[in-house]
Length: 255
Image 1 (tube, rainbow, N blue to C red):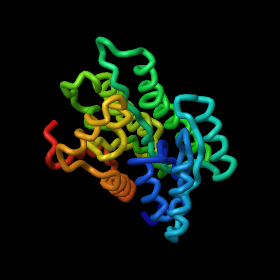
Image 2 (cartoon, rainbow, N blue to C red):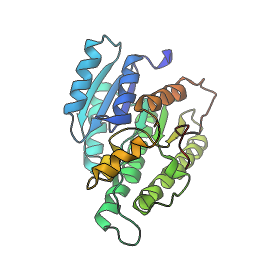
Image 3 (cartoon, rainbow, N blue to C red):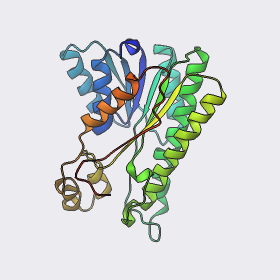
Image 4 (spheres, one colour):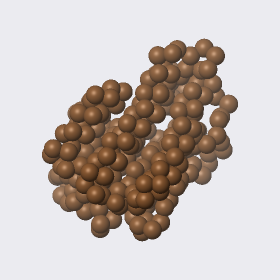
């Protein structure tokens, strides 16, 4: 991770869960991290904790609604002005709504598409432009995917979500191919976890907190820190090593 010290990383959805853990891990290793979310109160608290702990990097909170392209473009413009540009992008923000294919609400589907697919694509495009403008040839784009992007489980409430994560699988491989066609050494990776103990299930099952809690109580789940460690592993790989996808589940998880 030495070569990333002082470099700029963007972490989307950095206020809680995986995003917060990744942001902390990168600051611990000396990176300048822009953490964005719709609400930055928790990121500001995390930034203060990182500073108090004496971490060599810095966490910069940025308020951004990733379902709004204008806000994303404004964020990249601000990063360019204040920090030159982005060298590492962690497309972490994602959401699931309990909207089955046969009875789901269009609004919920659209929300998942906007954040899980469109925001990832827009951020990726803007990050590449940022790297190209500055002749950065060793950047890295990491998409936080899901095992739901590799298999469809028999749970109707996550079928549309699964479709958006299959899109992330395709987008990551397509990105890798386009980066090769462009003759760059910028790398693209996705990390696909199974059950991670975060607030994710409570947002999915927001009308049934008992069901959400049961999701995490049935087995020993992955922790957000396990995901952060996977990100560090990916970024620590030598420049000639391309890690395409890390698929990781709790040992006790079946599907």
